[in-house]
Amino acid sequence: MSAGLPTHVPVAGFAVLRDGGVLSSVGLGSCVAIMLHDPEAKVGAMAHVLLPHESLSLDRTKPAKFASTATPFLVDEMRRYGAGSRIVARIVGGASMFGPLLGSGVNMGERNIVAVREGLERAGIPLLAEDVGGDYGRSVFFDVATGAVRVVSMRHGEHAL
Image 1 (cartoon, rainbow, N blue to C red):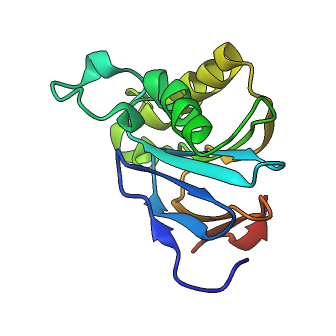
Image 2: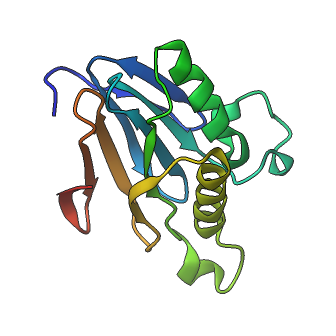
């Protein structure tokens, strides 16, 4: 991972970097972090997706908030930084944080995972790796220069994705 402080991507937020730096999302529960990378242009982007579709929210002003809009939005932003057609993806999150408490209710984490995968498929972006599901939170750190992704959780420690 690159030295220096990471650029934090908050819930419903996004960031794009070129030539270096680390993007991070901390405390992913049912949310999903989408990390897109163009290894040749060394451009990377991250969105912290909160909901599967904009129809689930009254505030629809943040395209990174929704799985249905985050991927095309990130691709457009990356192209402004010089990314081409070599973009690949990794995703992290989508936990069922309250499953035991809610019984068999709506699993927003699983809905987010499915919607993110569908968005990547529609955009023709290969999904290289994922660390999704389960019942535990995660934090993710994405090195834009190398494409390396580090996932950290209290329950499962730290690993590369």
